[in-house]
Length: 206
Image 1 (tube, rainbow, N blue to C red):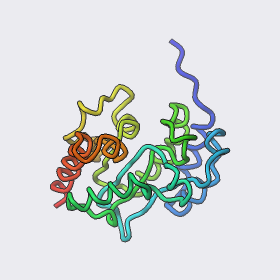
Image 2: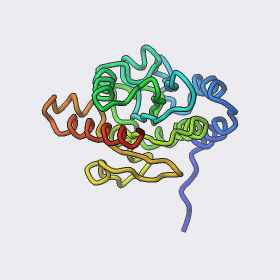
Image 3: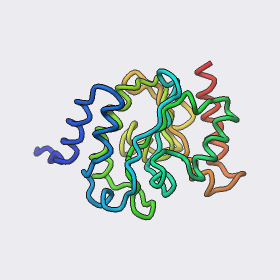
């Protein structure tokens, strides 16, 4: 049986990321990345991610990809989804200032479309090295793309949320993306589920 071909872009990113000894170096080599030509041609910024204000993150939030405001500012979760996320984190008793805030894909896909599988594969080396360097004990995967990155391509969000999954020594919680909570409204199931999951994570961190 023939093995699947290795994507040269994914391999190059993985090697470059793995060689970065610290966060600052990793960010510097990430920002000029052109492994995904379509994304590189249309982005304004590579959104590397945010660090906690001090020390090791108590937890990491991992989303799908930057949106328009994230692409404009170069920071993750600063648009409408970010505002709702901040609100729900506070309601759950979590402090964003103690978290690392990351994305599976670091460049905005045109029109905010879902990242394609080759784009996720090429960008994976960046996120993998970020998690190695930051070593958060708990990860919250926001939305299906992030959940699949950690739990596999056949992941069904409704079947895996509301409980932790041990992945490489970390507790990974998969839950709804704030954009789904916005789409279904303040009384919709995604918002309630996201708040419930963040509250459960908060209880494990006390």
